Image (cartoon, rainbow, N blue to C red; front, side, top):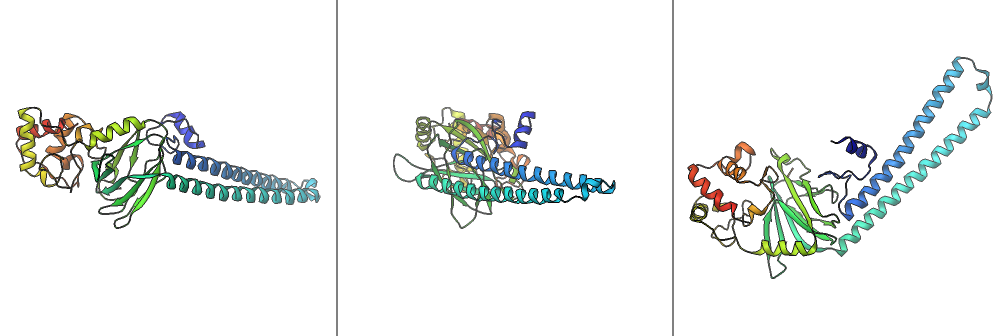
Amino acid sequence: MKPRCIWAAAFALGGCAGRQSVLAPAGEEASTLHGLLGLTLIVCGIAYLLVLVFLGAALWRSRLRLNHEPALAATPDDRRLSLGLAGWAGVMTIGIFLLAAASFLVDRTLARHDEAAAGDIRITGHQWWWRIEYRNPAGTGWIETANELHLPQGRPTRIDIRAADVIHSFWIPNLSGKIDMIPGRANHLTLTPHRLGWVRGQCAEFCGLQHARMALDVKVETPHDYAAWLSGQARPAAAASAPEAERGLTLITTGTCGSCHSIRGTSAQARAAPDLTHVAARRSLAAGTLPMTREALMGWITNPQALKPGAEMPASTLPPADMLAIATYLEGLR
Ligand code: CUA
């Protein structure tokens, strides 16, 4: 952590634009919560300082008493002490009232965002990846992708939140507070991002061996770029551009890959694992585990258990030339 970020963390200041931090709000909801955090720290900081002042005063008085200072025998000091304590109680009462009022107002503000939002996205937590579905703006149904969330800037988006297996927790610290993903129960969260660019989300509930490798790349785009990205995602997979890639596609659809993954526009239509229709357009692989490169793709399909032990995907038994063909095909899915 940069020294400036340590100071920012200590005093809940903004301006520390870390990739994953509640102290660098990039959305309306996170800014509202950041304000509440700042107020809480100020009120609690004042309370703590007052406790220290009274403790210091008590120690000083007992020291004078030990030294038989005659000044302490007089009553005015006690009156001052009573007045001080009454003032302290008054300040604390005001502080608690302020916190209760601010907390209520923050809750109302978040609820208002919720009412204004359009429910265009649903996210399901799996061990250990994110299924992300967008309502198709050009027609009916949903467009499926995985592990990379795109959001339009300045527009409240309501996200329906579910879990497929165990309890996960959906958390993008720069954009909002966290919310549990519970099997059999639908939750929702509204996000109104205001800063363009990438931020990082993370599963925030221990959900098994690879909980730490359940990250989420989040890109905030202008509404125009978002619409263009979404219409790109709605298209079926790109056709194989070379014989090697063509062979890769055949291996996927006739082999084991196609029994778990879906690639729209091909006969691979299973939904047990992340959708691969535009996999190479994503920033990372295996929920933030690896950067999206040819080498990472090869490594992942060869032996995922070496990179993310416990993940559902088994190691491949194909010869290296076949895996190279599969990687070549996947690399073209942009
Ligand atoms: Cu999913 Cu932790």
